[in-house]
Image (cartoon, rainbow, N blue to C red; front, side):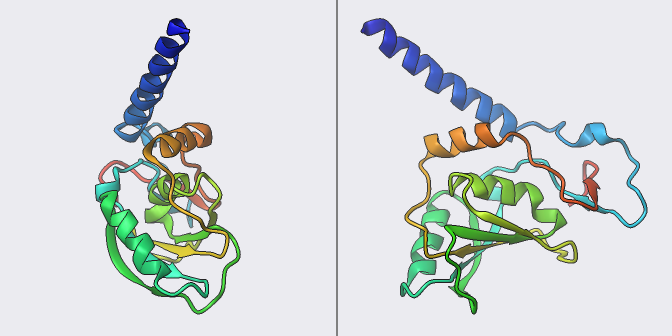
Length: 172
Protein backbone atom coordinates (compact mmCIF):
# COMPACT_ATOMS: atom_id res chain seq x y z
CA UNK A 1 0.00 0.00 0.00
CA UNK A 2 2.81 2.37 0.94
CA UNK A 3 4.57 1.68 -2.36
CA UNK A 4 1.42 2.62 -4.29
CA UNK A 5 1.25 5.97 -2.52
CA UNK A 6 4.91 6.66 -3.35
CA UNK A 7 4.38 5.68 -7.00
CA UNK A 8 1.28 7.90 -7.18
CA UNK A 9 3.11 10.90 -5.77
CA UNK A 10 6.02 10.35 -8.17
CA UNK A 11 3.61 10.11 -11.12
CA UNK A 12 1.95 13.43 -10.21
CA UNK A 13 5.33 15.12 -9.79
CA UNK A 14 6.53 13.74 -13.15
CA UNK A 15 3.39 15.03 -14.87
CA UNK A 16 3.86 18.48 -13.33
CA UNK A 17 7.53 18.53 -14.41
CA UNK A 18 6.69 17.55 -18.01
CA UNK A 19 3.95 20.17 -18.22
CA UNK A 20 6.24 22.88 -16.87
CA UNK A 21 8.90 21.88 -19.42
CA UNK A 22 6.35 22.07 -22.25
CA UNK A 23 5.13 25.49 -21.15
CA UNK A 24 8.65 26.89 -20.94
CA UNK A 25 9.97 25.30 -24.16
CA UNK A 26 11.57 28.15 -26.09
CA UNK A 27 12.44 25.98 -29.10
CA UNK A 28 8.90 24.92 -29.98
CA UNK A 29 8.07 25.99 -33.49
CA UNK A 30 11.62 27.07 -34.32
CA UNK A 31 12.48 23.88 -36.21
CA UNK A 32 10.19 24.84 -39.07
CA UNK A 33 12.81 27.05 -40.71
CA UNK A 34 12.47 30.56 -42.00
CA UNK A 35 10.36 29.77 -45.05
CA UNK A 36 6.64 30.26 -45.11
CA UNK A 37 4.73 29.66 -48.36
CA UNK A 38 3.25 32.70 -50.08
CA UNK A 39 -0.16 33.57 -48.71
CA UNK A 40 0.36 31.66 -45.46
CA UNK A 41 0.15 33.49 -42.14
CA UNK A 42 2.58 33.03 -39.30
CA UNK A 43 0.92 31.39 -36.30
CA UNK A 44 2.22 31.50 -32.75
CA UNK A 45 2.55 27.91 -31.47
CA UNK A 46 4.89 28.62 -28.54
CA UNK A 47 2.92 27.94 -25.36
CA UNK A 48 2.67 30.85 -22.97
CA UNK A 49 2.15 31.02 -19.27
CA UNK A 50 -1.31 32.20 -18.19
CA UNK A 51 0.04 35.62 -17.13
CA UNK A 52 0.97 36.26 -20.78
CA UNK A 53 -2.39 35.26 -22.27
CA UNK A 54 -5.00 37.92 -23.08
CA UNK A 55 -8.65 36.90 -23.18
CA UNK A 56 -12.14 38.28 -23.56
CA UNK A 57 -14.87 36.34 -21.73
CA UNK A 58 -18.39 36.29 -23.14
CA UNK A 59 -21.54 34.64 -21.81
CA UNK A 60 -23.54 32.83 -24.51
CA UNK A 61 -26.16 31.43 -22.10
CA UNK A 62 -29.19 32.72 -20.22
CA UNK A 63 -27.29 32.55 -16.91
CA UNK A 64 -26.95 36.11 -15.63
CA UNK A 65 -23.42 37.12 -14.58
CA UNK A 66 -21.71 33.99 -15.93
CA UNK A 67 -19.08 35.97 -17.87
CA UNK A 68 -18.16 37.93 -14.74
CA UNK A 69 -17.77 34.76 -12.68
CA UNK A 70 -15.67 32.96 -15.29
CA UNK A 71 -13.59 36.11 -15.88
CA UNK A 72 -12.85 36.24 -12.14
CA UNK A 73 -11.84 32.56 -12.20
CA UNK A 74 -9.44 33.26 -15.08
CA UNK A 75 -8.04 36.35 -13.32
CA UNK A 76 -7.40 34.18 -10.24
CA UNK A 77 -5.42 31.87 -12.52
CA UNK A 78 -3.33 34.89 -13.65
CA UNK A 79 -4.84 35.36 -17.15
CA UNK A 80 -5.21 38.92 -18.48
CA UNK A 81 -8.95 39.49 -18.89
CA UNK A 82 -9.42 42.39 -21.29
CA UNK A 83 -13.21 42.42 -21.78
CA UNK A 84 -16.23 40.55 -20.47
CA UNK A 85 -19.88 40.62 -21.38
CA UNK A 86 -22.61 38.79 -23.25
CA UNK A 87 -22.37 37.21 -26.69
CA UNK A 88 -25.14 37.80 -29.25
CA UNK A 89 -25.33 34.16 -30.30
CA UNK A 90 -26.30 31.32 -27.91
CA UNK A 91 -23.85 28.43 -27.61
CA UNK A 92 -24.72 24.94 -26.34
CA UNK A 93 -21.16 23.61 -26.18
CA UNK A 94 -18.96 23.90 -23.09
CA UNK A 95 -17.17 26.86 -24.67
CA UNK A 96 -16.06 28.29 -28.01
CA UNK A 97 -12.57 29.75 -28.41
CA UNK A 98 -12.27 32.39 -31.15
CA UNK A 99 -8.75 33.36 -32.17
CA UNK A 100 -6.42 34.31 -35.00
CA UNK A 101 -2.88 33.26 -35.96
CA UNK A 102 -1.30 35.07 -33.00
CA UNK A 103 -3.64 33.29 -30.58
CA UNK A 104 -3.11 29.65 -31.65
CA UNK A 105 -0.94 28.65 -28.67
CA UNK A 106 -3.06 30.66 -26.23
CA UNK A 107 -6.22 28.93 -27.46
CA UNK A 108 -4.47 25.56 -27.07
CA UNK A 109 -3.69 26.38 -23.43
CA UNK A 110 -7.21 27.69 -22.78
CA UNK A 111 -8.76 24.55 -24.26
CA UNK A 112 -7.10 22.57 -21.45
CA UNK A 113 -9.03 24.65 -18.89
CA UNK A 114 -12.17 23.16 -20.46
CA UNK A 115 -10.67 19.62 -20.44
CA UNK A 116 -10.14 19.84 -24.22
CA UNK A 117 -13.90 20.10 -24.78
CA UNK A 118 -13.99 23.72 -26.00
CA UNK A 119 -14.68 24.22 -29.72
CA UNK A 120 -11.96 26.18 -31.52
CA UNK A 121 -12.99 28.81 -34.11
CA UNK A 122 -9.95 29.98 -36.03
CA UNK A 123 -10.18 33.25 -37.99
CA UNK A 124 -7.18 33.74 -40.31
CA UNK A 125 -7.99 37.46 -40.65
CA UNK A 126 -7.87 38.22 -36.94
CA UNK A 127 -4.71 40.22 -36.23
CA UNK A 128 -4.58 40.36 -32.42
CA UNK A 129 -3.31 37.80 -29.90
CA UNK A 130 -6.43 37.94 -27.73
CA UNK A 131 -8.66 34.86 -27.52
CA UNK A 132 -12.41 35.22 -27.11
CA UNK A 133 -13.69 32.67 -24.59
CA UNK A 134 -17.41 32.20 -25.22
CA UNK A 135 -19.03 30.27 -22.38
CA UNK A 136 -21.79 27.91 -23.50
CA UNK A 137 -24.71 26.04 -22.00
CA UNK A 138 -22.73 22.87 -21.20
CA UNK A 139 -20.17 24.73 -19.07
CA UNK A 140 -19.88 23.71 -15.42
CA UNK A 141 -16.49 24.94 -14.15
CA UNK A 142 -12.86 25.49 -15.11
CA UNK A 143 -10.47 22.60 -14.64
CA UNK A 144 -8.13 22.35 -11.66
CA UNK A 145 -4.38 22.75 -12.11
CA UNK A 146 -3.89 18.98 -12.13
CA UNK A 147 -6.68 18.51 -14.69
CA UNK A 148 -5.20 21.26 -16.89
CA UNK A 149 -1.79 19.57 -16.78
CA UNK A 150 -3.34 16.24 -17.72
CA UNK A 151 -5.37 17.83 -20.54
CA UNK A 152 -2.27 19.56 -21.92
CA UNK A 153 -0.33 16.33 -21.77
CA UNK A 154 -3.14 14.46 -23.55
CA UNK A 155 -3.51 17.14 -26.25
CA UNK A 156 0.17 17.34 -27.12
CA UNK A 157 1.66 20.35 -28.88
CA UNK A 158 -0.47 23.01 -30.55
CA UNK A 159 -1.24 22.25 -34.18
CA UNK A 160 -1.00 24.77 -36.98
CA UNK A 161 -4.31 25.74 -38.60
CA UNK A 162 -4.58 25.26 -42.34
CA UNK A 163 -2.87 28.05 -44.27
CA UNK A 164 -0.36 28.87 -41.53
CA UNK A 165 3.24 28.16 -40.68
CA UNK A 166 5.01 28.54 -37.36
CA UNK A 167 5.99 32.06 -36.36
CA UNK A 168 9.69 32.76 -36.10
CA UNK A 169 11.07 33.57 -32.67
CA UNK A 170 10.39 37.22 -31.97
CA UNK A 171 7.19 37.29 -34.06
CA UNK A 172 4.06 38.05 -32.08
